[in-house]
Image (tube, rainbow, N blue to C red; front, side, top):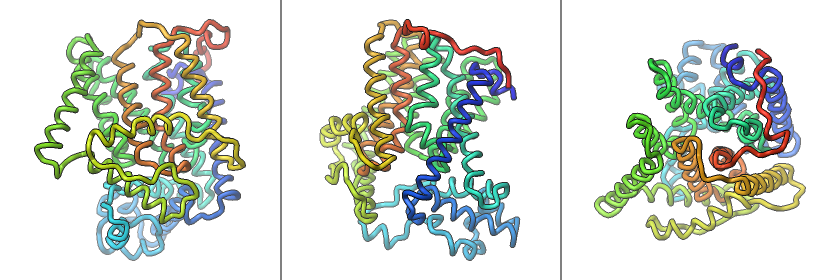
Length: 427
């Protein structure tokens, strides 16, 4: 396949990464099968079981199955009876939202995306969940390889560290290999970033534009706040690329200044549309959902007023949750894995700072990565009150922050880290 053959990773490296993902995905599935045995609350199994329900529609009406899977005509009232046995397909009920006194923030019902993935793969798996793991690992591998292809040119003599950050951080390897939204998210994110950067480097980038738009639409469906976190960097990088590729830092600074001024105008001129309302209400909704779900430990339970000063006071808490939560010795395999990852992340930050240099090969890419990672980590750590969710969701931001810091780092003069990946092998 040309996509893998031209990735710069080589056949052996690509094959090894895929095998590691299969092992991690199998391990995650086994943990949720034999350790966390309540399948009604397991994100892996509750969407897998709903996928079975949707798949069974094909036996009665392939046309109706196609409507439910594609979403085209899925709101037809004649389809309602098929969905009686699903547990997570339906929108949050008005009674539930009224009970916890919040709005519905799942604007695009992203749970259906994973359910639809399972319903499609069910054609091949016939209900064997480990076949779904293989499909998800392959999609996540494509996304990771696309991200590597987009960025590798900016990490000469640091390619192995880049591979570590994209593929091999413990949480990234674990959560992005299971039948969860994280695998789909890295597939769409990697696809988008590869094609977005390619738009400005090719004479006729129409195909790249089309693919980037489609990938962004799926990112919105999967986790819309990821698209919002990426938006400032997209705007600033586009301005930089179309304006002669000069003064990247100023263009990113001006873009963020314009966004902040715009938010200030909205806050004081039309407070009913204050975007901080959504952020703070989402925090409140997550806390109440965790309480109703009888979470074992809460990282925070306090409400925050939707004003800049009140939100800013939470920055130290967000930083702590981003890098040092959790750090503990425990019998829980998932929390222990998260602890090991946090220790590795802190060690890598120290290593990159030790080897830091003033010159950045591509300031625009650096600021793009910083912009996205800081925003997404703030949103995640501000609105996620439970460790179990936090360690998963952070995989969307931590690798990008580390990639930005690695860009500051000069080549590390040891034989392992200073050697480049060979490209002689082919797939």
